[in-house]
Length: 523
Image (tube, rainbow, N blue to C red; front, side, top):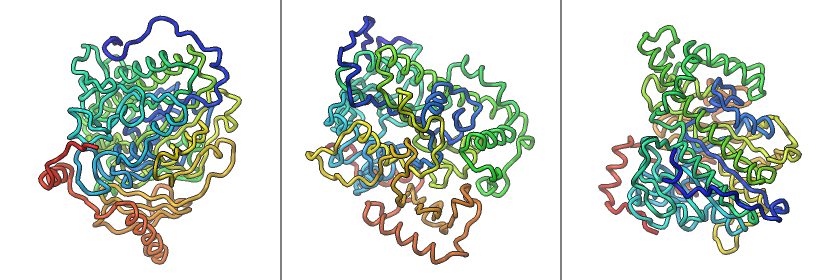
């Protein structure tokens, strides 16, 4: 790849400051991938080769009960602000400004981002990759909500949440739009290149906060042929065999209890999930090729994370760096029948997919690792305490010893600092809430109340006994349903969630465009 087309990459060696080893605030590398299922990393059960991420998991701590919002834009808004997405205006997607408080299609200017807070705490802030929290109507010119207008000192990436890996659009370098891309351009590698460049030019007298926001493995399925070919053979056994292998590996890793049995989710397939042998040869061939491509996309991302680590070591920054890795939601069924069968594997052992707030949609890996191995007091262990993407901001603030600036309003962060878990202590217990496209849920202790949409009945799940959401207990414990529903409604009333909307994608966008044609999202 031609790095010159991105951010100038200095070929000289940057002198290391004599103070490099004296920085008390650690460098933080926050890595977010896109649409990757709970079991898609080697360290979470997969056959996909992710040695660099696996090494972070082996040295650090893995969370088995980390939750996101179930969709890209809402999760990114929650990560960036430390708040539930509706509260900051990103209750649905960036594709339309609905001109109602919880659904503006971008982050409300009243709420500071993690970059603004870390910058106020002395950090140099960088972002490389997918933004997707500026409303689509504002893509042509900076409207106040672009990354470098929301606290990042430098930015390279695409504002949009979808599109080609070979020709993403719109790509920005800070506030300059990039319209010409090299012939060998591949988005995942470009994201890596810019992140490495940021590290290379970073002044080590100051702590660094790097948000590495990967697009992979989001659709479309696109990867260089040589990477795909390396993955083909391992998928020829089919998804039934691989799903069992992942499940058993998850047991060995301590990610799920030993006494659990692998569930089969027939309901998601209209009553009958097909076995691998029931597919036609053409369907099997397509699944193998598509799954190999998906795996290749993750492996390219992992390769890039290895390059980031290499540059940190080269700059003598690695020992003072903390890494956090997660996914914005579970794998998607948006790729049709074959895509659904892929996600059935990716989300092992959980039910459903991206867009819904069942476990498959909202469960993803979370890894926290110190570069200084002596600080990894729970080295290689799995933490089963609940955690949520709103916890990332307070955790990063705690890592950097950064206080919420008095110059910003809304200091009442709902998330909690996860660092106690890294020393074997208990994390503050709380109730967690979910809503996306009228798919709703609340988790309190071992109980989860969940429904697919506003027209569906609530399901009551005992997560201790049934983490895979296969047994609805709503008729057995109606009082518990009423209690949790009341709490969810109270949260929705106070977090700009209502009224619920469940129109299909295009219909919803067209409806709100017609209702209010002004879509630039100016601050």
